Image 1: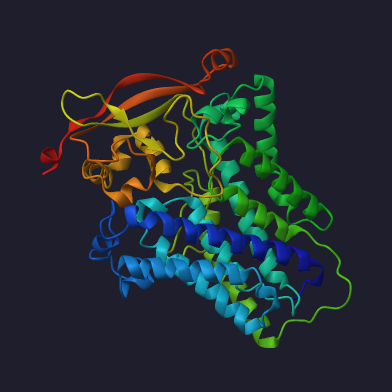
Image 2: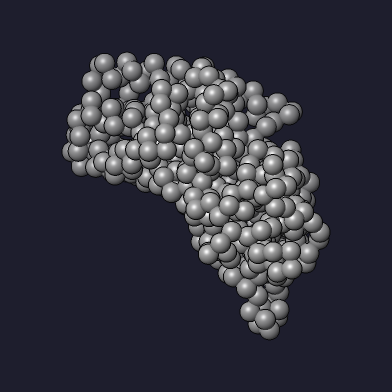
Length: 459
């Protein structure tokens, strides 16, 4: 039941999960007022009035205020920092601390609505729940928990591999990366460099991706040292993805899970598991064996879906991303005008492309939720039906909480009279174009997305 040679794996997994929790709570603290607060784009109180606890279990069903939400975030931040030192704690304190972190973040995700609909939120909750049962340094890591972490990694990688092969033909003909670096949700500083790599290298990248996601996951369960080598392949691949784009903490968590496969002999004996804790771990394994029915059925089914939670506790989820690749990048550019005759001024977002002369920033592993939703919005206006009108109204009022989500407000002194949004096609500047103009993007206006609106139009 115990695996003393995996002490380093436990250390890496627990510390990286704690860091990811810290990122999650800090992200929530800095962004919730504009997105989910009492005056946010999709207020939590309005959500709680229509969704019962059994449908979306959360601490906030007991009480909600912006101050209380901030307090929960601060407790989560403190708890995440303490978790970095939890190896020194007794077993009971470890269990309490990690359970509190999971329950607090679950409470946030379950009221987070569209802003928390990303697969890495469920991945953090599932990895964080399993971390509860890893235990501190005073005992050897439980073997079954390490296997469950490996099984979670398998679902992340193999699910992503299957959705690609079943989805867009560009994954099968190896041309996906002709487009992906340019059209991904949040390009990073090196994405343009990756985009202009020779096309034969792009095909090699896709082949390597298929090998990592469709073959390597089975090797994670092989005897050592094969399992450790497979884990290192996952780490290398995820590191490559971190360099080529911004995917919040998805890559960080996948690397975290890969460490669970790696053994390192320790000097000296490690204490075995207390009988009551060993029984608890056994119950955990049985529960996850039952929960695994749904993701396995999904992966084996012809109509595989990606990033789906089958229960409101976000345990036993199915994963996968980028089953389809967009060939052309569109961006929604939001502008305001002081009056009907004034020039239109552009709002700047923190992460998403806007100013063509601005280098795409490095954002990950932090998560900019509004910026990500703006990418989806450019794909279809339906993605903004619950929050886009509220965003327009907030900009017309110069709402300070919403404006804090942006990088640049062109109307710092008084609100604009008019707000509009235009749709632009973006592409990466070639090397020659960049040398000549300094631009990272070349953009072309496509048409209106939201017509000019005043506050009176929204009544």
